[in-house]
Image 1 (cartoon, rainbow over the protein chains, first blue to last red):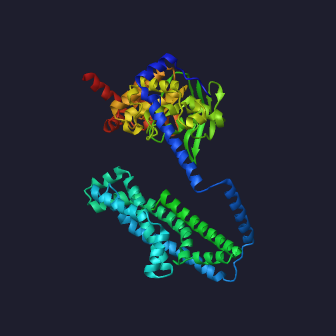
Image 2: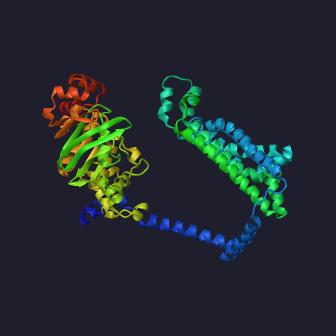
Image 3: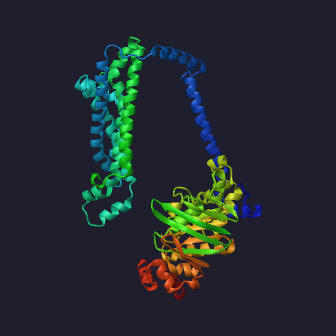
Length: 287
Length: 269
């Protein structure tokens, strides 16, 4: 139902004279915008040249990948399927414990890091920079550090997951707390309730579903990333995969990968149901 | 002519709208009154097809719009613009873009995706805003405006659709009396000046009497009154609201949304 705009050109000119900013950006801003896009394109192209990314190399790589996929069929559990099962459970358990520890510490840090709660700007700035500092170091680096500190095995993995995620979750929690609806907090405040209880009854019921939902996402994501922590000796299924790749037992690698996929899908399905219930209608008694 | 023929909507075993039949000539300003839960909102949503009827038909200028699908349905929605109690503007967009949203069904999807509105459309949007003294606010974010201003932006958005009918669902229930008057004046202006049919759910009798050519009273989903304001007797008010007009007025004074008190105060000042 396209219709012409019912207005004549003289009137358009009139309004353009009265409110020029409403008719789009000026030539200077337009040039800056085009310049920005061109700079981005130049950067992307130059990195392709630097990394020697050529269609030929990508095609050859695909050929190599094809060979590996052929070797993977049919997947086979090999002789040590009981060990694989144990390692899978260990991987999920590491992810769960690590996420649980991270989320528990992230809640108080999140409250302290929200500028609507801890109002001192210097304190807020320092704490946020601390969050950033921890987030700058990847899980795998933490795993290497903790393997040296507490020895080989799942404990190093749990600690690596917990330390790497606590500050990420704290930042997300702080932002969730900053974005809550203030009216509800005001309602509790207006009754004369002491500050900690204002947080407990005005803020927490609003953010708790978000916090749990994000922790569940992290649990699922950590189960995937915990599969590689084993490569540096921090427990889990990673070691089993690395060993089999070294001896080119691709059929067994494929079997383990399929097991991981099933595990992650199962965790995702369960946590999706929990999240839906939490965000939909959390039982008042749990809030 | 907008005709409703035996329009019915059931939710489970609750009948929200119960075989409503009305014929509304083009250009009439109709106030729909009744207690909350009487089916007023559902009736407007049935006309716009935001809700599907269980039975009955909506006929506009001889054309049955109850069975429309896809593009035809969207065109019908463009023809009958909605005004909401909570304004329903996109808070993070500026006022100008909110008003231009009214043109979306009149223009190409691709250019709209990139907000490539033409100078003509922008000028029309500003002119429409200027009718309600809001041209200067065009580049502000919608959430920086007061409720009364936001509702006038919503009316400007509705006009950009070039509709034939305006459906206003409790347009002043979230506003203070003074802003309520400004918004009702705006609705009456577009009714008189643009010849648009206006169907307006109202929760105060005074507002309906003051602004509307015709009043439809609903109770438990049924039309129990249909006439000019003068015909609305005390007997009728009791049937619609289940209380006398004095009791109703007392309740209205408590909620202080009656408009004539403002008008009187303004006249006295």
